[in-house]
Length: 92
Image 1 (cartoon, one colour):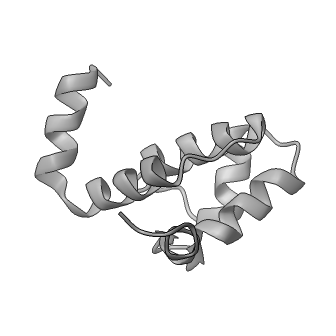
Image 2: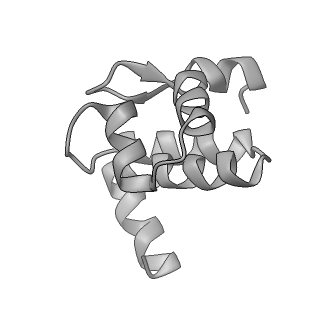
């Protein structure tokens, strides 16, 4: 498992070239709904990083962060087979 600092440095979305720390800051400073706030982070309309960003948005809203969960979701994005299996298990 990565440290908090390592997770904060992970790239959350390749399109926007933002890391987790940047995304948290953006989500905390905006009152926009997820769909519009996401565009501030990603600078695109793609859904490649949807799971990690949606979870991070919820964490920023409630003020508590699970860095292990964020790391897991980012790793799943890079592991397409793992992502498919995770969706089947959770029903999403």
